[in-house]
Length: 148
Image 1 (cartoon, rainbow, N blue to C red):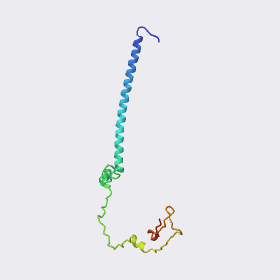
Image 2 (cartoon, rainbow, N blue to C red):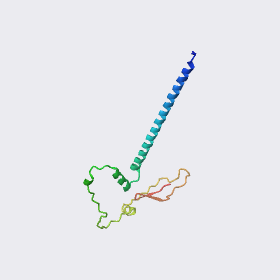
Image 3 (cartoon, rainbow, N blue to C red):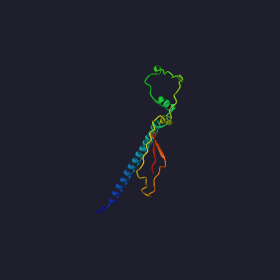
Image 4 (cartoon, helix red, strand yellow):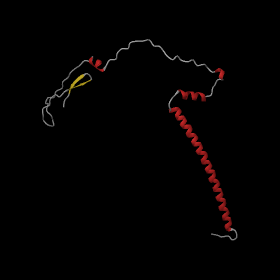
């Protein structure tokens, strides 16, 4: 390293001061940029939440009135089309409705066919006891005996 006499240290001090000033200016510029970006982010988040509320929120007539007020008109005020109000009630002639058929009603009309399935040697494979009928099972209108 070389050393200069008479002012060698003052040049390095001046460079250090200039570097410190430029770093301080850069830091302040970056901080102002961060503040601007934070404001833009907050505004974008507000817009997003408002749009989500409009799309996925509760639908009421009040919301449509607000939207209509914000929408620009294509016609001057004197040329707005007149909207005819719809009648509030509609009269329908009376009629008799047929009673609906229940499950038991339409199942009772199906033909019943009973089949009995028997084994040639009704003996239990595990314990060797003789098997016997323990009940019947009804499936889709057909009676099926239960086997153990």
